[in-house]
Length: 337
Ligand code: NAD
Ligand code: TYD
Image (tube, rainbow, N blue to C red):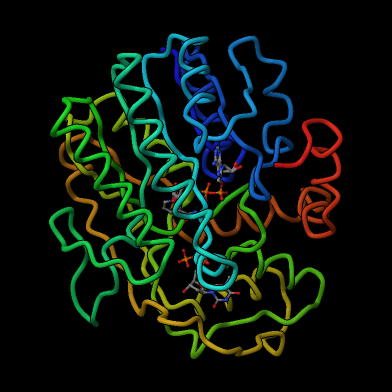
């Protein structure tokens, strides 16, 4: 199977490429990534030597670039991870790139897949499209779409464009909606890697508001296995929730990281809350479990220990990001976007 993976230099996309090339000897991957601030080819160190792997520096907001990639490579499926993915940036930096990449970029891919008769399109989306829960209940695939921040709104819009391409034009598309991922290669602006890195540097750990917002956490490799199950066995036009069955307040996660690293809780610093901060996410993943036989393999504590160990062992990786060094390498190799 030959795949075009968008956003393969990012956190989940790079983990997916590692996973698929290790698991499936027949797999070939074309990684199509614009190398934004979140794209880091160091996430794929070693993979670039694999003859089954090709990298294209390309931007999904550019229809010609997408068409050229699909012309050059006859792929069986597109697995679409590329996105602007950070809620805080969508709130504080600006929404324009979110709309361009998440909405227009997804539409460009859908159009190109139709034109090039790509057999399957897997759209990787998020539980954030469902908005926030009260104290009870879980998101199912039938929950209303009620995004509350600009990131979530653009992901919801892209989900609808995928649905429309499937319904109106018969494109074979499937959507996954996953909860909060963590694991190797996660950009240290997201909660877990930020807290690990700050704790290791004895810097304050910024907890938004009261820290009682609840998220469901899943180890990234479990998400990758879920995406792969949907790619291979998912039914056209269907949506599959993916979750780790571990929904806890942010403060619990932060305290657990400090405990693993044997750092004091006095490092926790309560800071101004995120505007419109969603209070609780919890996901019902029984459909993918029942229909596709998928289940998360790693429990939260084991996965968190593994993740902390990875950040300890790969200190240079995240230090180069925090210092900005990693961008200098790309600027020299590929130019800036
Ligand atoms: P990320 O920000 O780490 O990586 C995004 C990647 O997309 C980067 O490599 C970046 O260079 C690339 N990209 C951005 N704009 C592009 C463009 N215009 N053209 C081509 N490439 C572009 O994101 P992530 O955390 O790996 O998330 C991947 C996907 O999974 C996203 O669609 C996100 O919405 C979804 N998701 C993420 C989580 C999570 O917890 N991180 C949870 C559920 C769903
Ligand atoms: P984040 O990793 O940004 O993921 P998302 O917003 O997509 O869920 O944040 C996870 C949770 O952690 C969210 O409730 C916001 C909170 N948070 C903090 O309290 N402090 C921080 O510095 C960050 C980045 C997040």
